Length: 545
Image 1 (cartoon, rainbow, N blue to C red):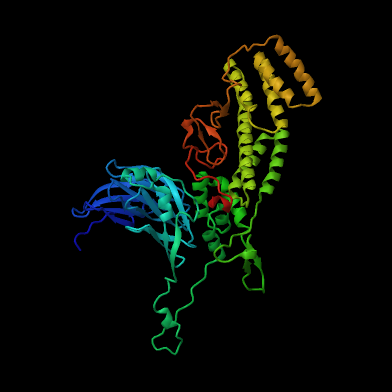
Image 2 (cartoon, one colour; image 1 turned 90 degrees about the vertical axis):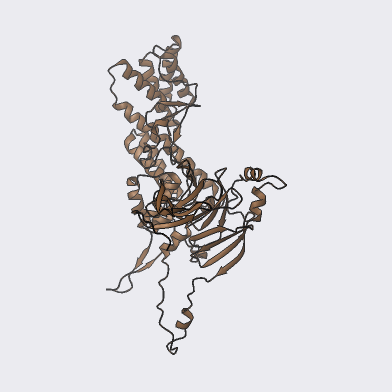
């Protein structure tokens, strides 16, 4: 042993030598990355940004960079001279095992427990290829030092050698250009699951077979043999987790931790109190029980949605809540809104919204309808919560009355059903008429008549419109411009006009002023405003395109 150095942090998960300096990168179970001088036995620097163990670590052989990958599903590229993380690459859906730089191109290769290998361009910060084929965790993947080859190893007991010449031709400019030009040309986008970029050239199988298994199989007559007990098989619930990247499949399997990680990375869920009941209800349908005989434990069955062609590598649990079920619940929420039960209606819309990431659909039309359902729920929740607040506000001073009128005006711009939009316009019309803002009141009256209200309501509206047109002016200036398109900030209930900075909830799409970034979404009560996420994933189709 030349030298020994120790840190008081958690277990070491990864190591990497620097190609020129007497340095070692050490990645730790605690989430920290440490830079050591192994000759001096001293720590030079440490880097803290990962949330959870860091397994993959690698120096760049020319630039002052290193790359790390961890259990938070994130790949981070760091500049050790600047002593900070430059950017984060998102895409993996499970723990990242290894990360390595390419020896020539501006590429990073990563291996993950999500059963994929990804190749990234660290200059354009894009994923340029996703390699699929392994059926279990991919424990390591590495570039060949000189040829267009990749080697990967997985817990599916195979080593695969991939030909990536197609990827090089697609992403690196041909011809007698210099190295810098080739780097600039390598900025493609991923052909997800496409086989033109990298194809399997060789597969080595059965690597897990230990050498003493054959002797043990020789039976009791073999003097050198010994008994090898049978290994326990993989449970259907574990297979569901292995075979799916949809959050609901992990919830049904009882793997709440991985389900929460998927929801966190896909739609930015950070507070799971709202999901507690949904998780328990979903898990309750995971299996059936049959009593064979008294005093014996029950036999369990595990319903599957692909039972006709199921095998251990593709089985997934049966679907519980369907998109059609949520559409029916939407009608109930509409009825509550019509009857003026805004609190109950808002809760109903939120429950529908939070259930959408726990759907499984199998065609693009259903994916689009689910997105549309999210938009509907968001519009109603923002509008109803704003209206509930408006009704509770004091009305004594002129400024308070003006603020009440502004919020009523904003409510008319929520994209609601016609019957509900008539209600918002009628409220705004009455308030603006009382405030003597006749010009804007007349606009509300015209908009309401276009929607075809009931005859008695229409007659009354025409009378108010005629009165307003006699004095087509607004007495008081308000923070409301009906001709300038705007979104409603779901926290401050003020307009965010087109072209102004805005941050959004990654699930509901609710809009917020920039100062609310990082806070809890007021619409979902579960997601982080402005969080960078992968996006809603409710169909296997979304992992193939």
